[in-house]
Image (cartoon, rainbow over all chains, first blue to last red; front, side, top):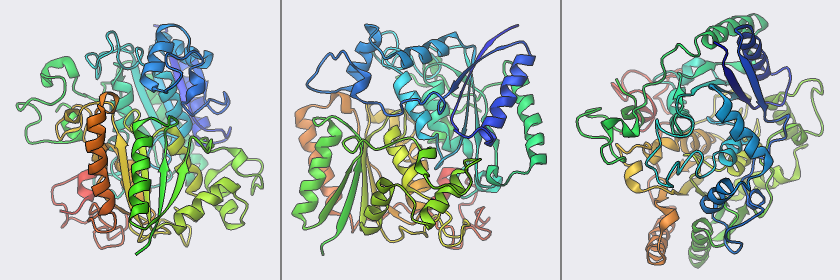
Length: 257
Length: 257
């Protein structure tokens, strides 16, 4: 069945590994009959910094509260056009793919700024009633798939379970759990290409095939089993109950066995 | 003894909790006789997006490689003036304090972009010989103290060891370990103020006192015991040896007991 897939990506160089893999995404998904929507953040000259110019019509012109102004701009349809366009893309999409180089163990600033500006109060947080009642598994993007593909400079060993950098899935938890699962998306395991700085053309071809397989299973693959806030594991919506993830703390406790 | 302390902060609103706490930093540190250097990223209109305009003199005008161009610009003194100024502030400082609201479980884009642009190849990574030989405990910022202070919208429970967001120290590991410890800084435990959106004036006064105490102990407090890459725990510089952090994987394995 034909689906709509939003690809958000962050690299300005047309010959970069990021662009090469985005091209593979487009080809593969279109061959499968899907519709691809692109947000090429560098080409769009996406405004990365969330600031007062995002709120031309202020609730309070004396004091800038991002939560209040964001909520008001969203509710009263006074958001900037670029933000509205990205929110519409998200709402229209059946799946969202993020592709970016891992810079200092997280998203490039331009992509972080996309999240900050597009994820308005009332839209991605404070959903429905202005509280945290609907989040982590429930939210405006519920039912959509999310897939992150990152390209690291360093070798796989550095990101292995006991590698010096820490494992990629834990480093990206603020993104996968905190920004994608938060408003309801089902997040697939992160797709990583290591050693991007030294990759050979032959390896690129192999990586294209591996990525193509991930894309072909986009709507079939099982997501990371993040625990849903309202699924019973967090009776007070804040803290895990004693009878799940017994003896575990931290990031790993929020992933079901 | 008089020290130099760089404060990098990210909030545009003068009455925000971030600004209030930055003012407390300045007052406290100056009362102690230290010299304070400020990087008020919003006021500076810091360019957040790392792009081709960072490299007016290119090694390769056909293909933008951030690593190569960054390394060349740094080595040949062709960096932009704003980047040079921040690198000098870092080199001059005895301690670096970052103060920012936690947005989507990480640094605001403008601060992420500060790291990306200031942390040139040859400066913060690829130090000395263009390899990863000197990092995680060794690097150009070795011996300096780093202290992160974040302000969260949500309650403390959400960031507790089994709280739904994950613990702050794990969420910020890409910053504390990956960006501050990486070029050699000794990183103190993160200072957090929770519920910033709903804080009362009385609570702000209490928080000022708690923050003041942290600042007074800036050069006394023990850092997070991140394991040094060249300290013996990573014999091949990539993976922890079997005899340390036995049975542990992930972020927690990189913190000594």
